Amino acid sequence: MNHSQIASTHDMAKLIEAASKVAGSQNKLAVMLDTTAPTLIQMKKGERPANWRVRGKLRAILGEDPAQAFMAAMAEDLEQSEREDEKKAADGFKAMLAAFPDGWRKRRDSNPR
Image 1: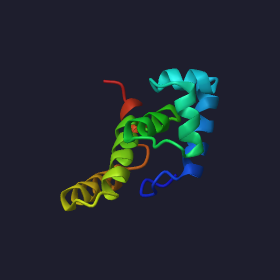
Image 2: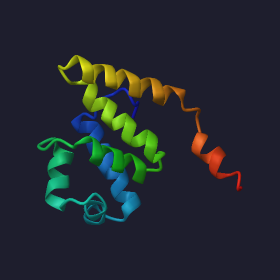
Image 3: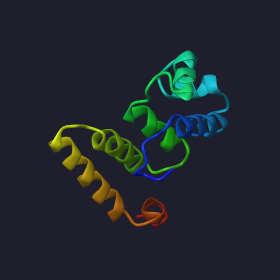
């Protein structure tokens, strides 16, 4: 999923399905997300919104760098705001995300000190 896209119901369902495979089951994923299986099912169906923390955790479980995962999810929420200051914050987050070189975490972690 592109960082600038809002997590649609279809995107959320795909994120949850993929993260469930990594976690071992949807029940195990719910525990990892500090939620319940019924809540996760509601998010998957689009009946309940998934906040930036949940979307960030899902992305991190799928292997995305946590800093990028959470920043992208916060930017998605902020850019939907009607408040001008929150829209500006979203633009700032997107600029920071664009500045991260691909694989930056892997390069840094692969050079032991």
